[in-house]
Amino acid sequence: MANNQVVKAKETKKTRENGGWSGYNKPARFVNLEPDKDEQKLIKDWEVDLSSLDDMLVDLTEASYSVSISYDFRNKCHVAYCNPRGDDHVHYGLMLSGRGSSPYKALKQLCWKHFFILKSDWSSHVAPAEGFSYDD
Image (cartoon, rainbow, N blue to C red):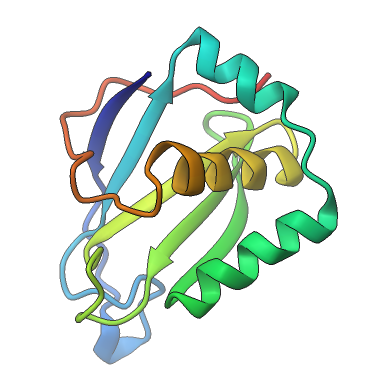
């Protein structure tokens, strides 16, 4: 299946009190699932249309997650981040990411991880970091 890992993010000076993006008073930990070759093929072959992707984003935001996309200049790929909102959220302090050569592919990987691998439960997938890959 997937190689589970968590990476402790760099602590930022920005916190909830001074407008920090994570909303945490402590560093967020990335829950990164390293898909094996079979999983990578499934993600790459998954043809999700924009309507279905929109439905998944609605499900995430209605479950008190925020989703953002940025470009990772260091690793030269797009990254989609999913953050739980509120310190009472079951996944408080964790962050899930998906990477790809385009924003669409990064979102696709993020949604695959959340809905199909983790089945919306990140709690049992916390382990040391070893790296990452993306869909192509």
